[in-house]
Figure 1 (cartoon, one colour):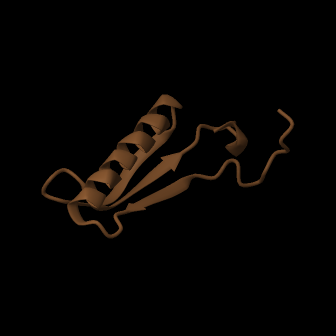
Figure 2 (cartoon, rainbow, N blue to C red; figure 1 turned 135 degrees about the vertical axis):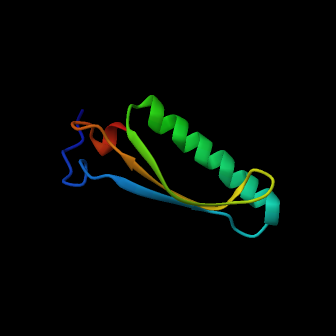
Figure 3 (cartoon, one colour; figure 1 turned 90 degrees about the vertical axis):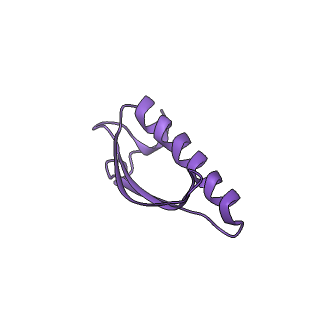
Length: 79
């Protein structure tokens, strides 16, 4: 790959997904985003850990925070 190595490549990420205005519909949308990111992380073989969540009554999230870590040797440009 022609992208040069970045010192940030080996670092992990903390992802925060927060619902905006829109009430329950926005919260359900955030649950969809969380599932999408979770599947991506799992398929790539990365680590995932739920740090905090604020669920709603209909299965959505007002806020969800999780940790996503890369496997050693995977560069940010490859993700």
